[in-house]
Image 1 (cartoon, helix red, strand yellow):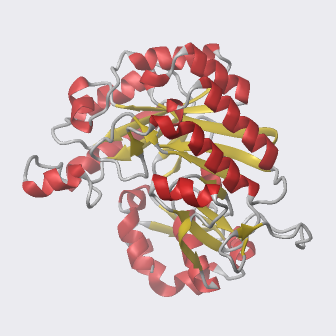
Image 2 (cartoon, one colour):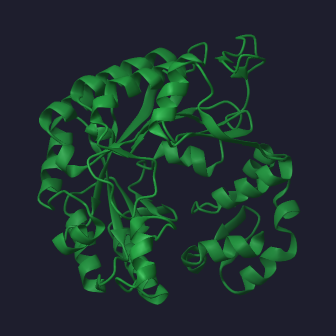
Length: 397
């Protein structure tokens, strides 16, 4: 997109040279749906509560943002995140699908993922999702224990998970992913084990397991700093992560990324675009995009987003273009989240630089500590290295 002298954004001319590699031209689209019934106190995402009356206007703004592409751009994956995409009505779900088919049509066999809450999964919504082409749902389970859900301020009942999974499958959406959170204060290892075992009973295709984080500025962080509760110690949190790896791998899941596990052939293709550091479109309040080497993030203010997008103005509040060296470092950091790590040939093709030019001698002590593997294939974390991902990345850079 180009900015005119009036501040309005006009489409790029359709005569751009092509074809370009996937790290320049997006093959994936993320759409952010910010609406939530309640702002969970650990959440640091861009959300809007008490704004349901603006949903249709929001879809108008998303459509206006896509219109500025100027022409149809076919892609391989769609992902709706939030917020709560399942807060949209069946009619709104189908309308957004129609908008995207106009501007960013999904190629045959493409992946369409959508995040849902268990308590939003009624037959009408699931039917609309299936009609719209959803191939994969990610269900925000987080826990099967009421005390943990209460602490996290999640509103659903554990029994609603079974209904959500059943309705998704009855609607024809067979690819099911379950999200779980570990490390809540007071969560015993046994309780976490029961969460994993309960989730496995639904025979999903994919798991995302996240350690509870205390993002600065969130209500949960403020409660922690006031001493309202005692977070789990690092070794306790590590034991829960280890247990998840053991149980899920024993059940036939591949630990293909630091926080993600999949049955063979059921990895999240959309998220693999991020970890490869390839380009992607992003639309909606707070959405990020990475196009032609430029990263942008939309405003997190709903009113500002609506006003700017509907007026044809630039919706981004943050923008940066990385140098080749910075882009290569970022690519390495994202690649190392994957089980396969950074592969030499792929890295060279992606960045124009050899791995050794980025890693240098800094990998040697990490290899000696058993945290990193460096061989003819490339550089990747050991299991122990995954436990200390942030620390390892800090030492490499």
